[in-house]
Image (cartoon, rainbow, N blue to C red):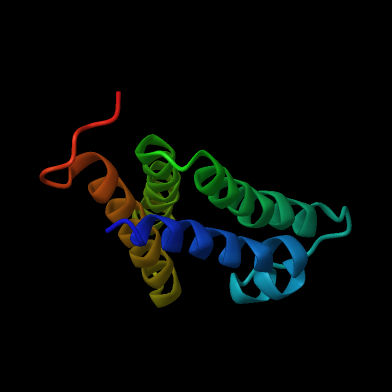
Amino acid sequence: MDMLNPFLALLSIGLGIYGWLFPRYTMAVLDLRAGHSGMGPSEIRASAGALFVGMGIGALLIGTQSAYAMLGACWAGAALGRATSLALDGQTGKKWVFFLVEAAVGALALWINLGAPSRPLPV
């Protein structure tokens, strides 16, 4: 399990790099269109990109169970937002795939850092 935490942090960084450095590609994957204000790519760089890079780097640098649990909470928060969209905005296959990935990463990081048997809870 000790190798899973850095893996999940690196996964966060790797996926975040796409949003941060390749916002138009990310927007295409997400079926988003850039408007005349330029805020579309800016929002993708920030919220779907550098935010995940920062989360992953922060977890690696701090290196505690609490830091990796927070990484999981962030992914779980993304899954909650996606589940809300599935319920209120309509369902698509792509939304389900993104939800399942977000929920799986979040649940795994939370479980191995807060709920796994034989591990003390962080204080």
